[in-house]
Image (tube, rainbow, N blue to C red; front, side, top):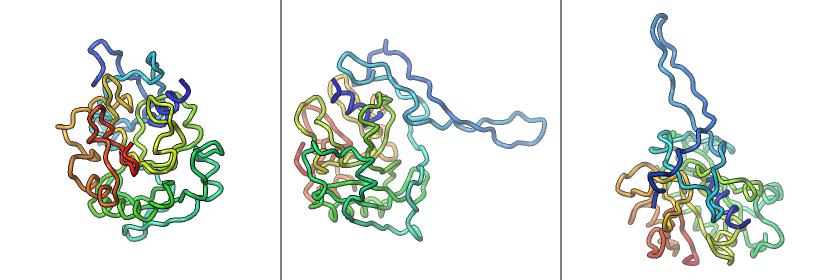
Length: 276
């Protein structure tokens, strides 16, 4: 059960039946647009606070799959800058051993199936949904580090939007699922979904791209759990991965396969060097 909660928490996060409870109300921030005296102010659209509202749990330990809140149905939340944006808006990347402070806040521990020496810390430019250039971070397997920076260089050139790109933290391993995460990330020391074996993420050999816009779908399970509206792939919105697009082509060029092409389930966010 702990591993089940771990995976759901990392996603922070088949639609549910018509009797599913309404989506939780998040803590939201709104402001009123300044207007001339004597007129009614028009409230600004509320900003969803990611991770604010834990979901009720299903018997299998995941959060309940609920209807997508309207503010997230065409997701375009702004990116919080944790690193300085690229100079001049040009794509930039770095590859380095994983710094001690980054390792300390990551999910790595001695029991993980990969040694720290076999991992690399990347920084890479990306375009946010706010149409601004940002710098993200990622931990990947050392042997694919340079190739991954090339992939995201192609995505940057195509202005493919990414909401967030940061190292998954140890705190997320025990956090309750909120079903609203959209973090593009690679290394996470956890087991595969609904299995006891290690995930390819635990080796730094898989990357999830915009997981909210590209959910994991298996039967009635959708992860992240509030991403139900993105199960409909005919309604194409920014940040969605589509067959043959720049994301699929760029990962295929380095020999990685796409979970959106799997038959028994769809893991649309998932790109992997191992095939699983």
